[in-house]
Image (tube, rainbow, N blue to C red; front, side):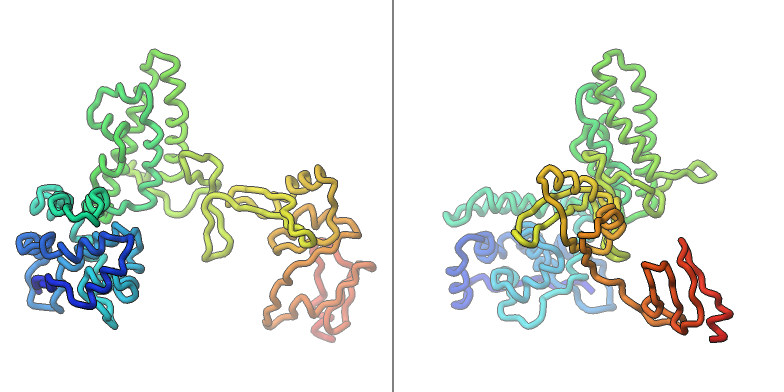
Length: 425
């Protein structure tokens, strides 16, 4: 069904006047409340409604003018889509602009808001209806005449809204495969003779230069193929450079590009390139920092970048030593450098309260008799077999006894019990 016109009241009510007096700093809310009927006039609302196809099925869509105002305020405040829905219920400034004061139900859902933004970034609507640009910044400039509204604030808000309309969210993996071009904008790269390749290599935004719909698999594949072709062209062109300084400046970005290509791109039997599913071992995740890595704290919690390790003195409250490791390195790998820091302070450990991840460190494996180690025990889970706590471990005699006391064997690297004796017992 076609959406209806949004016709909020123009004059402020007594309640709205009181809210306007309370707003001290975020004056854009006041500006939009005073001028929303001028910004979203009938002609502009008709253009917004043109994004929806006529249909006799379904519920009437939310007025797109109201969703457009919410998009502007989101760009101004920098909140997420979930926070937009919360703000319409909890923040009276948002309610003032969207004409939903004291509402018990959000004026629109997150799905409706996201779907509206997808319609806004549709190139067919941008090019056909608005000729490739939003009129909101110009409208805001023309209305920027009240003393309480800073000119740069409202204009910047309009530009942010226009940027939000024109921006298409790129696929994360495709972006990682292309991001190496960000390092290739210096020196001799600007002398590149081919116009299209030069636009890709020297432009300020690779995503804008590619100009693709990243929600479409076919267009993602075409973009990946184009980037790989440019890389091959650059590799062939590099030996033709005469200046040694130019060649030296290009080597590092090209090396990074090849590394990203090898770890993220695979070729099928027909020679078609595609992104690898999964994560390569020791995968590089940043073109600026070669040591950043993917890591996991658990199956559901992922860490990107680095891990920070802190040795805290429980008696004095001082931080004795710190360490930083790539996210994919085990926690125990940092204890060597921490021990070196402690040695410079002429400090020794008497108690060590650690996470289980540090149990394999040299501080535990090579500990002295005076060092006591405290750590959270592994959980004991019941099953059809005996759990570990049911066995008796005699460390002095190096003997392990089963729960039935029927078998006793000297421990080895991998001790085993005689199942027949245990069963007979």
